[in-house]
Length: 243
Image (cartoon, rainbow, N blue to C red):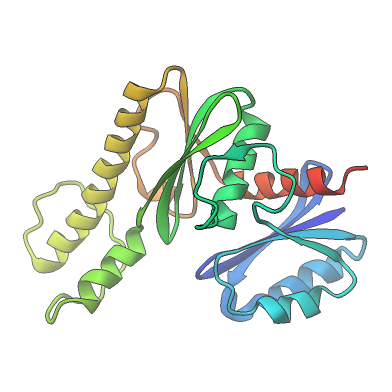
């Protein structure tokens, strides 16, 4: 039995796996990371190994102490991975993106895959059928775009996401909502179109906490996965603990 921990900018998500099956999961604000993990570890004392993907890094040392005798791996390019990357080694690839690429290798082996993760940031990563990561892109996500407009202007209000139907907002708030929503929608559509024109037989994956804010898959052949990153982390853990 193994523990997978995905630490984002605002949430910590924990998953208990038995081989490749998820037995239990929990999600909590990073402010309450220890109570969330304590509950899941208490429910599953058989956990022997863990893997952590941490883009937050604000409580890394405390987490290491907390996990105690559980043998813990930190997701990075230093581990045994199911792919090779052309990414500049002087700018390490984020642990979340590493996990997503591992999931591509596990679930869509020998396929050309574009994986798009909609979280605090939106990441795009391309992996070839030969298991080569060719790099990708990073842009601001929904929450970051709202915060940027409020923080870097004198008059624009602080808003949360609101679903809209048309780009023609008839108030400042409505215009902000349409700018964020349609900006991201058309960005994602445009990136998919560019890659589909460049890469034959491309599989497109949408994942991440904000994926439900977009319309249902833009066309056939685009797949949405809610636990894609967790499965990638579990795959990496298995590669690094198998005899």
